[in-house]
Each structure stands twice: as C-alpha cells, then as structure tokens.
Image 1 (cartoon, rainbow, N blue to C red):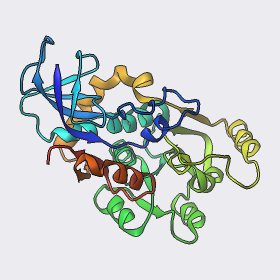
Image 2 (cartoon, one colour; image 1 turned 180 degrees about the vertical axis):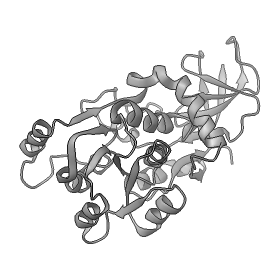
Image 3 (cartoon, rainbow, N blue to C red; image 1 turned 135 degrees about the horizontal axis):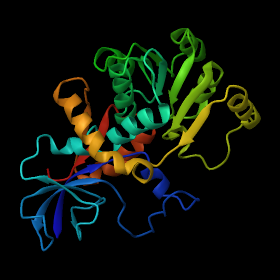
Image 4 (spheres, rainbow, N blue to C red; image 1 turned 90 degrees about the horizontal axis):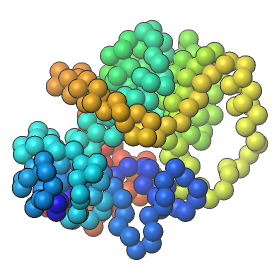
Length: 303
C-alpha cells in the first residue's frame, strides 16, 4: 500500500541512528531515508484490512510518502480524534512512560518518584501516572516556565529546575523521604544529584540519556563507576535499561485501553508542539536535543 505521511514524530532515539557506534539498532545508512514514526493516510492498497482513506500509525520515516506491506502498521480507522496523539501520549512515548514505571519502577502507594525530563512527552506521562497511582511525584525540568507547567498543568507535587543555581540542594529539599523510583531520561549532572538521594531498594528505569547523545568521549572528571556500583550493591537497588517495543510491546493493548481512558477522563494531560513542514524537521530535531522542546514535537508534513 502507498501511504501519505501526514505527521512525523521527532524523538531523541533518532540521534543514535545517526551514529555507527554500537547500539541496539543498526544506524541509518548515508543516503537512506531517516527513520521515524508517522501518522499517514492510505492512498492505495492491496493489503487486506487497509482501505483508501484509512489513517494508520506506521514507521514511514522522514518523507512525504512511504510504501508498506502492512507489517507493524496499526489501522486507526477513517476518522480518528487527534490522530497525531498516536505519536505521543497514545503511542510510543506514552507506552515508554507507562511500561517503564509500572513494569520496572514497580510503584507502591506513598513512595517518592522523581522524573527527569519532566515536561517532555515521556516524563510528563510518567509523573501523571505516578500521581494516579498515589505517589509523591517530583519533576526535574529545565527552566521556570517548564517547571510551572509540570506543577500547574500536569499536577506534579514539585518541580526542580536543573538549570538554576543550587540544583542539588533544591532536589534534596524536595525529597525529604529520599527517592524510591527515579525515571532516568537525562543522565549527566542530573543523575549526579539524584544518586546520593536514592533509598535502599530503589528502582531506576533507564529510558534515555539525552545529555550524552552528542558526546564523542567520556565526560571529564573522576571515574564514578565504582561509586555507582557500590551504591547498587549496598542499597540493593535495581537499575534497568529497556527498549520499549522489544521488551514491552506485548503490553500495548493493555496500555492503549488504560491510557485511552485516562486521557478521555482528563486524568492525563498532553502538550503537543507542532512544527509545520518537513524542511523544518532537522532544525526542530537539533533544538530538541538542546532542550528547547516544550512537550511532544511533531512535524506536520502537509501544510
């Protein structure tokens, strides 16, 4: 079938596809189409179950049209409400947040959850689910504007600005009972501030390390590996990385049902940042890696 891409998702994992360093997925070859999740409409189809005008969730890449045999494509029907949301809260980022927190974080009511990248599509989802499950939720975001959104619109208990002076002390004051679950999206100096505050048997879902994606060498400073390993041993902490569809893709139907209910009921809020035109995608993606995004960045291809 021929798909006309309408919306393109911009996600931090794409940076890894631009490098030939060892990773969980092969890099995009020079001259090939850049990969990316898309929402598209069917233009013509010989694939059973897909007809002209159907909206689909696919992996069509950074291009206006894509060919597909239907593998891995989800039919959304002819008139989905807010179709681009399937690239965010109702799609991969939402599933990432939900699965990372529930399956690795193993939350228990009354515990303290700290979320890095709290205003982004994954972090925002994690924190709001944490509140639904009865956790004390502390967000970490860059800048006063993002922190205000995290508390006022998303309902986190506290948000700490990692760009402000005295960030480690402010984070410590925000978690008087320590940290039981730390959802890692950032790494770097943010993780350095979190590490001494982790409680015994803390759980750390490692979703991303956006502060390191452009690094070409190890960071300067002392080797902290033994410090981390020693704390994991002494405090019996669990630190686990995950690739969401590889590890938890089988849970997508359960996630879609639950998240759909929460969104419809207004329990989960969602902020989308729409970028007009494929020609603006490279600059918008670079800005995402610099921390300029505010919500989920999506490119509207047909403008």
